[in-house]
Image 1 (cartoon, rainbow, N blue to C red):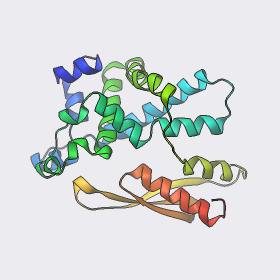
Image 2 (image 1 turned 30 degrees about the horizontal axis):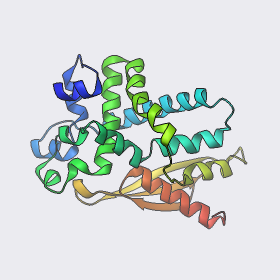
Image 3 (image 1 turned 135 degrees about the vertical axis):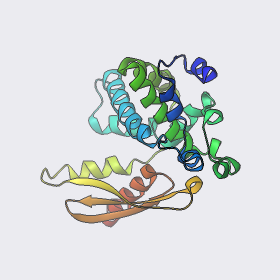
Image 4 (image 1 turned 45 degrees about the vertical axis):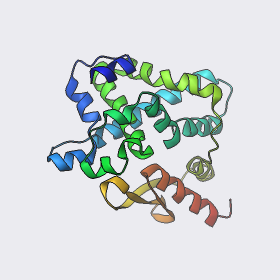
Length: 223
C-alpha cells in the first residue's frame, strides 16, 4: 500500500478505504469477505464524471454541450481509464481471487477501469473532493492534449435525438450478468419512457449501454 501511495502522491488516513478499493469481487468471494470494490466503483464514476465535466467546461468555454459530452465520454472510456491504471501499475496491487489471477485479471481492462474508479472514490472519501480532483486531473490534463482515441458515443447521440422532445424520458437498465467473475458479460436495455428501444451486450456495463444505444439509433434509421 505504501508503494502505491507513493505512486499516486497521496497518503491515506484510513488505510481500509484503500484496501477496499483494491479488493476485486473474486478475492472477496474466495476469502468470504463482506465487501469488495464495486460500491466504490459506483461512487468513483460519479466523482470522475463531475470533475471531468467541470474541467472541460472551464477549459473550452465556447464549446457546445454536445461536443463537451463526446470529448468527456472518450476521455473516461474503458480504454483511457485502464491506460491510466497501467501508468501507476494498479493491476499489481489488486487483490484477486485465484481463478481471476490465473487468467490475467490484473491486466484486464475492465478490472483496471473499475479499480481506477474505486481508487478515486477512496481518495474522495478519505481526503475530500479537492484531493480527488487533483488525482483525476493528473491524468486528464496531460491526456487531453494528445487525445486521439476514435470513439463513437452512441449514448450522447441518442440523448441529443431524444432531447428534441421534452416529454420523452431515456434511461438504461442492466437486465442480466452472465459468466464467471473473471469474464462477465452484461446485457443492457435502453428505455424510452416505458418502452424498450434497444438492447446491447458487452464485457462492461458501459459497453453494453453503448451497444444498446447503437441498436436504438439503428432502429430509428439514424446510423
